Image (cartoon, rainbow, N blue to C red; front, top):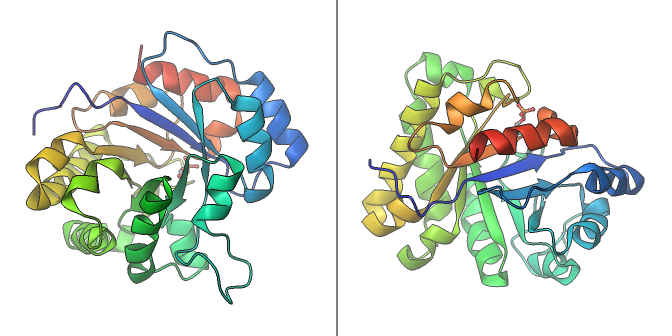
Length: 254
Ligand code: PGA
């Protein structure tokens, strides 16, 4: 599919289980945002440091995302946080369906079907994570897996709102393993995801931003981000160093 120049690159750092409030404040201090970067930038601190980042990064253009969110606005869901609780803090979006939450916290495509529209309705930008396991790739089931994840999670999002969703293709075998996908694998999978969105709406497919995630580092970012359908990156481990993170952003938008 031909790239659309209007898709501005987006680089998001997922801190996972890292970042006390003091560490978050220090990180924000050290993240020097270059005014001439032509990429959008975001960080995903843990819930307890969201307000620190919102406060410290306010006005810098760096978006703050939660790492999860519950689909209901209130109720007997111990340990959960709603969309409204996030917007009240000034949070910009939420990562939804990360493979670690699918693996360790029973996150399902069915729940995501409600989480994605709940985020949009609250004014949060959802980053929907999808990706196949190593076994699925070996069994040639990557497309089947991506199709069911994307179709199910976006089922209740109207065609008009599809461009507001960010999708992150994160092959499970590449997350935290140092085993980055080749640029060709990332491009093929992301073009396939774009075509799935295109089955719903051609315009949405051209506009939706699809990121790659999985062992992105300063030294491998440029060739992945140069692929025509790759609109940015969701970065885990390498985002914990603000200097390295800035190098990845610079690679996206030199
Ligand atoms: P990684 O994590 O960059 O450490 O592989 C990516 C992610 O989980 O989003």
